[in-house]
Image (tube, rainbow, N blue to C red; front, top):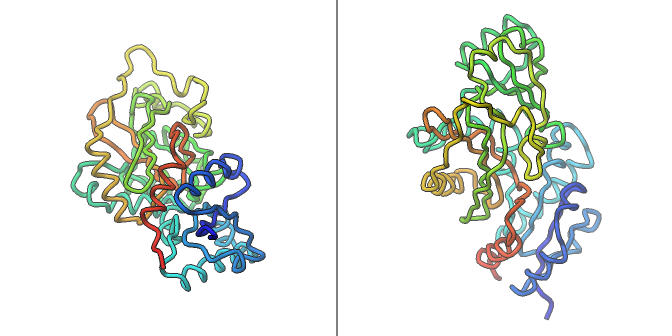
Length: 319
């Protein structure tokens, strides 16, 4: 008997990190086979009971006017529309909420736990101008404080990791719109990455930016950095991620709070595979969500394919 098909599609970059043989082997134990989607004969490859994908780059290309990307995204959407029982990991509407940082931060800001002050969102604003007077006014009115982190508004792709820390008004000349600026919160150079797989999650510690609230940084020129070089699992220590004597050390994360947060976001964004970046202020102990990512790398989650296969087996709707 032919096994039910789980379709998958990943970008060239993501494919380098995906172990198709291991994923297929585990899926087969659950009664499924993995099929890599070919958009030239997508319909003929099915029927699929589930699709696992990361088409964020393709969705962004479609947003920027690529006809080929638009056709492929529409093919997937049309298939979803015709197959309401299909398990989509993840739904395109959920992903769209996380493609643009400004929209993601609005979502976080409006979440139940932020409104109840159980977890916090740094003040932020979307900058679209290079006029210094306009920038100064917008930053003040949005209650964004110096220093702040400046990030690309599009949250995916190589350029999304290119960021800067702006310490004062002189640094506003380094703003490259459209970008989102987010008040920097001292957190002892420690980032907590929350890797979510359905209702389960894993907390991983990663290096992060050092503290910058000391007055000696007030007149510092803009610092440019690549977040991947700072906070990946194999990042080398640097001056930007090393605390000095007298700096306030990092605090431990509140796992009960994370559990509540994941349950809440699962309902709000309707996603199976996502990551949340959380920092803990060394002074106040307040927890802040500083980013949410679609289908992160899951570095350090050794049984990722087993957990994902379990989720598929549990949630696939049989005819």
